[in-house]
Length: 119
Image (cartoon, rainbow, N blue to C red; front, side):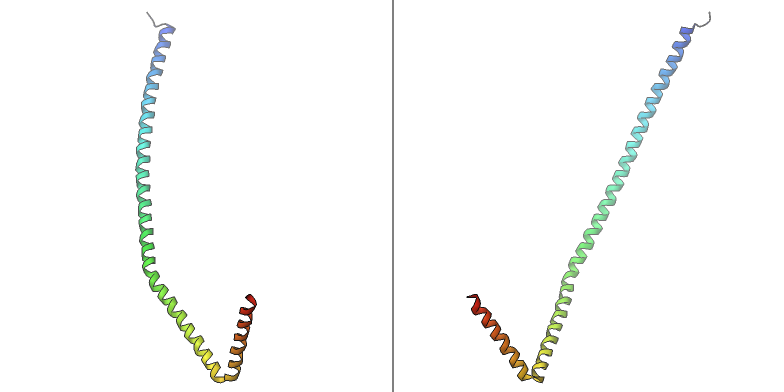
């Protein structure tokens, strides 16, 4: 006896169910593989972030170690400028002692006047 249309339809539905089952297994495997690969990428990214943070910390420490020397250089430069300013003022006082005395007297008088007006 030849198969009926109903039997053929059942066979095709069974084949469709088998193919769907295989597709579901393949999709599950693909998701599992993607999750594994994503985990690997995440671990690699985490390692890269840690390495960069470590390098940043080392650079910061190196900068901190040099900050003392840089501050000393700046202080030396300021001291040299201060000495130059004092030397310049001393030269001006030697060249014009009367004018220097007049300026100092006037500055003292102004300061005293301001101090008395605040009382």
